[in-house]
Structures are given as C-alpha cells and as structure tokens.
Image 1 (cartoon, rainbow, N blue to C red):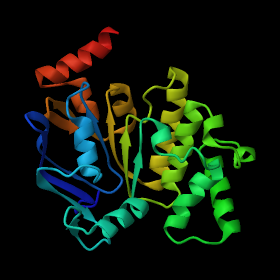
Image 2 (image 1 turned 120 degrees about the horizontal axis):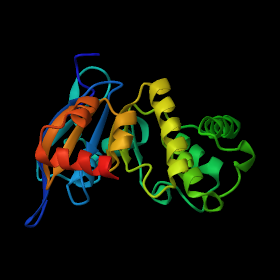
Image 3 (image 1 turned 135 degrees about the vertical axis):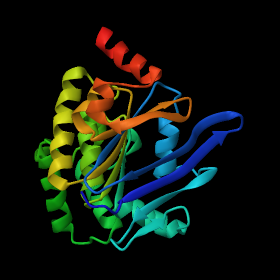
Amino acid sequence: MQKTPLFSVSDLSKSYGAQLGCCDVSFDLHPGEIMGIVGESGSGKSTLLNCLAGHLAPDRGDVCFDVDGTGLVSTLAMSEPEQRLLARTQWAYVHQNPRDGLRMSVSAGGNIGERLMNVGARHYGNIRQDASSWMERVELSTGRIDDRPATFSGGMQQRLQIARNLVTGPRLVFMDEPTGGLDVSVQARLLDLLRSLVQDLCLSVIIVTHDLAVVRMLAHRMMVMQRGHVVETGLADQVLDDPQHPYTQLLVSSVLQV
C-alpha cells in the first residue's frame, strides 16, 4: 500500500448548538482502501460523512485530499468552484435514498450522461454509449436507457445512482447506508456488485452503515462511533471478531443474538 494517504482527516469536529455531531475525528485513507464507519442512529456517523464530503462545514479540524498526486491539499481552503469540480470528478457520493442522488425527471441514460457532460463531454453518441456500458456494468437492461428512474424498483434506482457516480472515474467514493431500506435479497445482490466494482476500479471508499455485515464484506478498516466520538478503530475483521470497547462489544453481540 502506498505510504502517502489519498485522504487525511485531522481533529474534525461539528456541533449543532449544544448537541455534539462529531468530535476530534482523525484518520488517513490510502488508495484502494475502504473505511467503514458504524454506530447506532445518532452516533454522529452521518454528520461526519457530510463534513468529509463537503456538505457540512466543520467547526474545526481539516480535511485534505491528494488532488493531483503531488501531495495533500486542504479541501476546506478550496474555493467553491474548486470544491464543485472535485465533487464532480475525483469524488462521488452515493445516498441512502437513490432519489436524492438522481434526477427523477431525466431518463436513466440522461442521469449517467449528465455527469459526463458536467466534466466536458459533448458528443451525444459517445455519451449514450458510455451510459449504456455503465447500465450493463451495474446489471440494468440497456433497453431501459430512455426510461425514467421513477419506473425502476428501489434496488434498480440504487444501481443507477452508482452508475451515475462512477461513470467519471472518481478516486474516492462516499457511501451513506447504500443498502439501507432494501429487501435482504436485493441488499445481497447490491453488495456483490459494490464489492466487484470497488475491486475492479481500485476505489477508495468511506462507507457509513449500521449493518456490520456490510462492513465485514466491504471494509478493510472500521471506526465505531458513539455520541460523536470514535471509540474504537482497527482492521474490520479484528474489531468485529475481538471488539475491545464495551460499546463495540454491545453492537457485535446484538447482531449475534438476532
């Protein structure tokens, strides 16, 4: 693994008045590495993810990214146009509810093609061909390229959102409960797809989930959050097989008892 991090977070904190969102979170993420962030509802994991992805401004701390391979740059110090370009090209964000990450009034192919157009693609034939290829890659029928997302099932919408995000070849992908709200069989199929795409594309991923099975299947490392604080971190299998913090032990044992 490359020694220089792709992404580095230092002392990141965010509060909502008296309510703590996340506090003094620090970690590095390397190219091709997957970090799982887990915790119960209200633990601060979604607040942290939104601060990392630039959707929320933290109260203090820094978020740095190796934009062009020459070293880490603070994303918080970037101008708004620079941040938008980063989000459209080298970063991607997969929402729990795919409707939040899709334009429901635009065709499936148009959703994928729109991100390509945002980075300068203009040739209609090439855009449509790329959209069709990505629909195949996420196991969607290319015969539905002109159908609108509203006519798709929830699992199909999530796969379409993934195609829309990955078509521009991002290096870092943020995922917020990507399997949440889906039937168990649909979740399993989506997880298989995500695992193969992450491996094939050598993506770096930060994934928030309450589902420890998702972390075990996808993540190399994991952080456990409780009331805004990271209470345990380490290799995913080690933390899940031998949790040290009482809260992590409770999370793992609650899954085993189901």
